[in-house]
Amino acid sequence: MTQTQGPAVATEFQGSTDPECIFCKIVAGDVPSRRIYSDDHAVAFLDIGAWHRGHSLVVPRRHVPDMISGEPSLAEIAPAIDQVARLLMRTLAADGLNMFASTGAVAGQEVFHLHVHLVPRYADEPGLEHLVSHASVPDGELDSVYRQITGGR
Ligand code: AMP
Ligand code: ZN
Image (cartoon, rainbow, N blue to C red; front, side, top):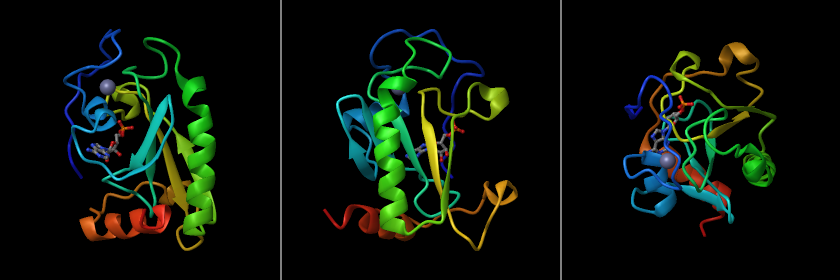
């Protein structure tokens, strides 16, 4: 998994983008990602360290460090969360899905640009005890699931 360095606590950055932020760079298209959805307020892309097939992140286009800093932004990405959750369930034939967001290093947050994890779940690895995986995911597997979600578009 790519280790993304971030401050121990969210900075008070208030602008719409942070030139140092990896997710701002992904939103801008300056860093490649496997983008599966976008609208006026949000972008969603596959997590490169996927815990389960189709693990995706939904992020606001503007830079907001987390759920409790800067402009409250969960509501503006809620439609994207709704759409992407359904997209993943439909295209991957998942059996369930976890949605969560970490706030602060103590909660496990590593990238300090608000993001909601959507983790499709499958019957062969059920329950919260199997939510987290530390196995690395080959690029080919990410490419394969990307094609399945997007239909090769
Ligand atoms: P968190 O621990 O909630 O901050 O999650 C950050 C997530 O971002 C981790 O699951 C990483 O695998 C993921 N991640 C970091 N860099 C990238 C990247 N360039 N593209 C896609 N996902 C990333
Ligand atoms: Zn950012």
